Image (tube, rainbow, N blue to C red):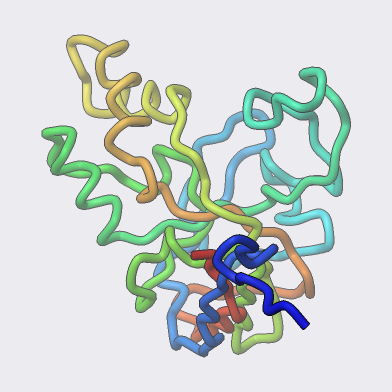
Length: 208
């Protein structure tokens, strides 16, 4: 029987590297909620969460309307709301501020609900990561929160920028992969400031 020349028939599927899942310890360093009519947030001592998200929050709801992030739908299409909460890290915001030549960027300026402390490179947590809060709440990470000019304009207004448009445009560029995460409520309850979090990062695979 003639032998097959394997070099002429490469593998049908590329090789895959498996990255094991792991657990991380974190803390809810600060909490924020947004008035119903505006995306900017204000500090609170606790967040009361239902399956719709934060009660009364600007981003609450089981569904939302699609926008520029979902070009595959006509703008305004009703879809599941996987952006109920915005999570950020203080160290990443400090990097963005430094890149933009600013003294600081406060979480509330860009609509953050939760400042997570203790997770290196928070924005790089993969979709599907679970956050188990000591008080019983579970959040599920949908993915990175892509920076936009809307948040950039809010920053510009708070720092009193002379050229508002320049700062608004600079933020999406300098905050890429540092803007934090969006998540939704998998198990409702109450989150309190300072609460411990156990983060479960799922197994991942990378095609080579």
